[in-house]
Image (tube, rainbow, N blue to C red):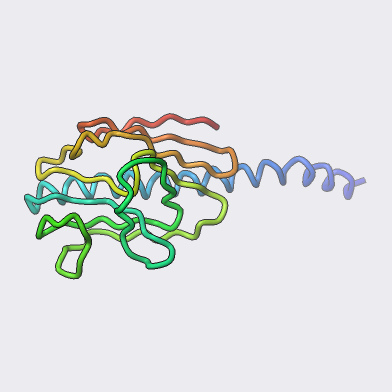
Length: 158
């Protein structure tokens, strides 16, 4: 009798547990993105220079900033840095603010404006590159919409 009760509880609990695990992974990635955005904006103001958030290329483990348009996956992580010489490339002389490396299992992170985000020295998005991050962990989805001023609005789609 008790074995059948335990079996029924497990039968109903396992799907809920996997959903909770996916929501936790999604919240982790959302938190990483939000903190990176805040740090890039603050660094741009603090150092009076352009700050970038660029996706990390899986093969080279460097910034993949070539793509200016289109949806790009940011599953492997990103880099926040100050472009000290205004060449729009991450080099050894640039100040690295933050590096986020992710295992790309379960979750897809996409940015609909290409391979990078940049902030003016005043903390505003540069080049009207407003867009949307979509974080999808096996159909548990959240979108982070960034307007041209750099403010973030969250849209949950559980």
